[in-house]
Amino acid sequence: MSGRARAARVIAKRQVFEALVSPGLYIALVAGLFLGYALVSGFARAVDSSGFNPQLRPLYDIIGRGLEGAFGKTFVDALFAEGPLPFAFSVSFAPVFLYIAVSSVFKFGLEKNAGAVELVAYGPADGTSYLIASYVKDLLLSLFSILVLLAFMVAAAALYNYLAGPELFVAAVVAFFLSLALLAYGSLASMLTVNASSSLALFLGIIAFLLVVLFGSFAIVGEYVRTLSTVIARAVQWVSPFFYGNLSLRANAAGDPLGFVGGLALLAVLAVVILTASHFIISARGVRA
Amino acid sequence: MIQTRQLVKRYGTFTAVEGIDLHIRPGEIYGFLGPNGAGKTTTMMMLLGITRPTSGEIFLFGEKYTHRRLDLRRRIGVVPEKHPRGVWPWMTAEEYLRFFAELFAVPRPEERISSLLEKVDLLGFRNRRIREFSRGMLQKLSFTRAILHDPDILLLDEPISGLDPLGIRQVRDLIMSENRGGRSIFISSHQLSEMERICHRVAIISKGRLMAEDTMQNLVARLFREREIHVELEKVPQGLAARLKKLPSVLECTVRGETLIVTVPRQGDFRRVVSEFLIGQDLVPLSIQERVVSLEEAFVTITQENIGSLVSDGGEG
Image 1 (tube, each protein chain N blue to C red):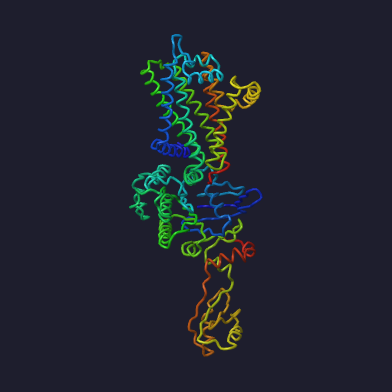
Image 2 (cartoon, rainbow over the protein chains, first blue to last red):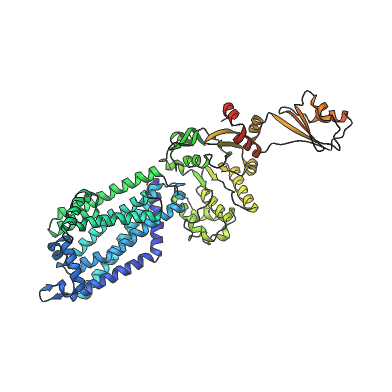
């Protein structure tokens, strides 16, 4: 094992331990589980003799319209064909992921400013070791959270007599691959900025921009905005994890396994590209606080 | 151990370090001195690979060093000026050292940590959190971290800055004891009197340029071609200074109160000549002593007055 890889492993181990013994992750998980529970239990009340009818529950009515506008009716039908679990899983993972990403970007900025990165760089590590360690820690925490939420969904399925079918696991896999690329953006934001607050602002700005462009190009907004968003989306979609995630989900809904795997592979490639850029930035800028 | 060739660092149009040639030999304590903004920290950061030089070369342990050579960097131990308080303040001293021991793959870490904590007098504080440590304790902990992996050379940045007299003494003892064990030590510091006590050789840097690199004795000899003999008398008779000045070895003679200040060439001992002359004049010297030039004086002279002549003389290197 190279010095850099070894250092990254040791630092990541320390960071994972710190994350697991602090309450933040568990609070985010509980929030996610509450959301998931609300959606799972609400779904039962939005079912009539004709099947799932979102209009029966105001919450599902709003969600159903929004998703139909964003991804189309076919996607929504496919999403709920198995019951509420894939959707509930995705919604419950969102705050947990947000917590993991935001806390990581903020922590990296704080530790760099405090001199921690410089301190480990006095030894057998360098900025890239720290970058890799932080990224690996985020991935492990995401994976841990996904597994916890999956376990909850499986338990909820047994409780409410829903089917914990392949779509739930597809949602989990897509969520993980989306995390790969989005967390890489978090690393990039940390490398490009000088302090924790600006890192966080840049990261949230990137995510918000990519989401606005994605949703703006769909049918839920006015014609002018949609046209503008579509033009911007064409230009930026190649660097948007949401674009590839959407591609993968659509391929899965259309029964195209190759397209599904291809979308995931592109998410992984995007993550590698962003991380490589982050590596070059930290190598050039150095680790001094 | 460490050698640099024409090391240059520029930030835009500003030149922080300009063509520095350093040579730190095995087993020596090397003082790196210079006023604020002289380029000391930039040079240290380049030696550590944290900052990349604009041009020039660095050789560590005989091998060419770049920021990618983590294998060479791990053979250095670093004590920064201040241990960053914001870094993992919740860790205990032992957890902190265990983390670095793992990072450096230190064999039998528990044993090593205990023995080093005992050496720096922190064994009783091993389970105390870093945020509760005083400045001196942090410095000793930082020192312990730096030698944890048994490095070949220690780089210390202002190691005694801000410490109380006891802390200074403890850190000095640590430096001396590490050096006695054969470890080379590179110290960047403003504490000139302290450097004078412990360094085998010093380098003086000013405005990014290396002004001198030599032993203290050679440095003073090069800087001060004359020296002063101070003779205290009960009463200085009129005209004595003028008569003394006629001696062939006396370059200058002045009177300050009841003290004669006799300037003689640097080479040779002229105390006997002066005292014999005074006895011949029926005068009894109450005390006669040669003024020793301190590192501080040399530093001030080098950085403020003799820059031009020293640069043209060149260092021993």
